[in-house]
Length: 318
Image 1: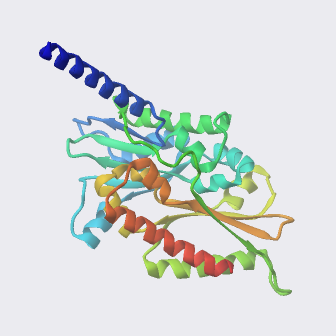
Image 2 (image 1 turned 90 degrees about the vertical axis):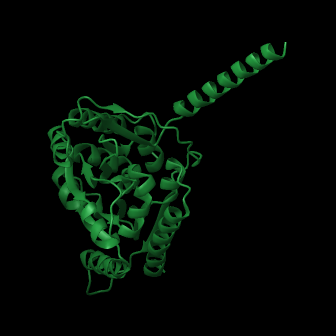
Image 3 (image 1 turned 60 degrees about the vertical axis):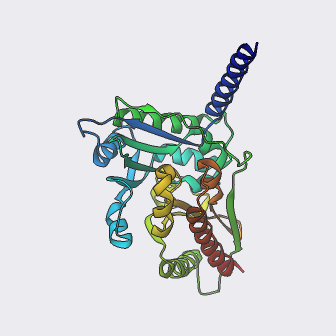
């Protein structure tokens, strides 16, 4: 009787573990990791970039992070670790036209790394992550098309690849976790809107760079996208890609997939007829709540960097 009870209890526990594991696995993940064995070493950061370009995703930058990591910290975590930025002009235009805050994901980002087992991996935001973070309805056809294009690029880059099963338990409760600022735009008699934004961005860059922030990409969305589409609802719309080695280095040690959130995209825009400039970026809580980040070094670095950015913007917009 005792043995039978033990067997029944063991079966129940096994079923519970299986059920809980499946429930966790079924939880929509904000980040997706595509992986391939890559035994022939044919998949490289450059071949991945070419695959993305071939399906209509322009790669604005594909940076080998091991070069600055080795110089600054003396060692690297992976044999290959790249951070890249990519976008599709037509879909970016359609989404920004409807949702200006999509600038927080313009451009999209990915990390590329070779794991210790020799596999090559690419992390990007999933459809769920893009929709939640940018506050876009799940039934938006343009966002779904964008997510489908990313998946097409991943499969083109790694024909033998597959998506890893991730078991993160998101704790964002469906919130965007975006950090927003606004500022009244007041022009002097002898200045114009171009002078205003030039001065604001010069001050922003001047405050950020001494603190170790880098700008691997800057996009004048108004000139590069809106003007080409004959869309003139804005006085300006710009985005920055912002990176800090002291942040991505410790985070990537345990979470190389964090490149789905980095470099961080920061947008600034002013609509014609309004006297307000709007700014925003996705808060670091997105990293923490979607990747189950628990190590103190990573969390401290993330929150410290965000605090620096917020302080600069608060001072500039007071």
